Image 1 (tube, rainbow, N blue to C red):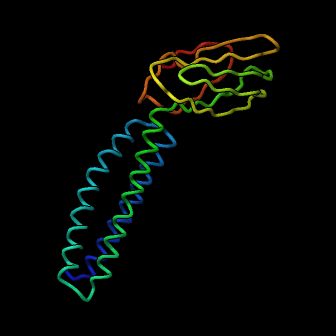
Image 2 (image 1 turned 90 degrees about the vertical axis):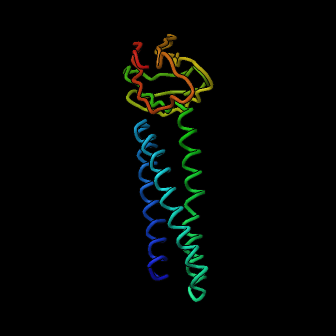
Amino acid sequence: MTSKKYINLGKITALVSFILGTVIFGLYYYTSNWELLFLGYAFIALVGIINLIVFILIYSQSKKDLHNRKKLLRTSRTMLANIPIMVLYIWIALTLLGTMRITFTNATGNKLTDINIVGCETEYISELKPNESKTVWVGITGDCSISIDYLNNGKRKSETVAGYVTPGMGQKHKHSIDGKDKFIL
């Protein structure tokens, strides 16, 4: 194989790895689908092996072809640029696993105020107008449940949002505030 083919192979490998990894990560970020998380782990392992093989081939070629050595080494560096991106994606995914991203929607028909989200971590929403939504990120610090209490027409009400959450169980969730407990988790 010529050096030009090695360079093209390296560039294509780096680009395809980046695009597919970003798509899998983006889908996981927006859906919190655990199957995508496992797909991402498998993807990292498989693509890591493929990238390593291509990297070694390009690096070996750079030792043989001194005329194209700079181009070959530049291609190797381009491939290595995916490593910090992968580490960032893994860090964000681990953060998401430790966080409940709950979108609260006021379904009562009244303005709600003084909304306390109580669970592993305490959060607060000052008010929600009828049909208004707000997303709150609640960190999961240990085994816990998540509930809310709020003022509706001056009366303090409460409802269960999640009966049980545990570290590593983070996900996206929608909760309609309507004065009724829901069996969720």
